[in-house]
Length: 184
Image (cartoon, helix red, strand yellow):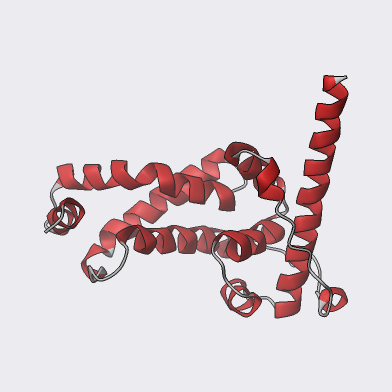
């Protein structure tokens, strides 16, 4: 049995030290995920905390047949989505009809940014844009899946992704212009 599986078994048996080990092993990576979905650092910390509570509560359901990190990641994402579904922050920004058949440019805005900068820009997006962008770009979900998770239409998902990318591209462009001005 490998070390991670032994720690998981010890956590299931209620060993606090193993719970602490598991938390410290996965918290940094999970916090980055939570930050992408949260508007503020405090929101990300709340999501992380709730996510680990659910992880420990449901640890007996982990089957040891897939990636444990992936299992925990899904819990964190579901906690983030639940947080915003339970609040009135998740507003439909656009109905999506205008973008139903639009061509979506898949520009790689991330190649021009460091991860901290990207997370900061994503956090500044309106909540609906941020949720759709994260689920599509980072989690690889299709618009149909996103629509089901967020309770919106596929068209709205496409529209919000289009608008999120456009806003991010504008921020990157402005950032590039600021750097050019400073370099002169």
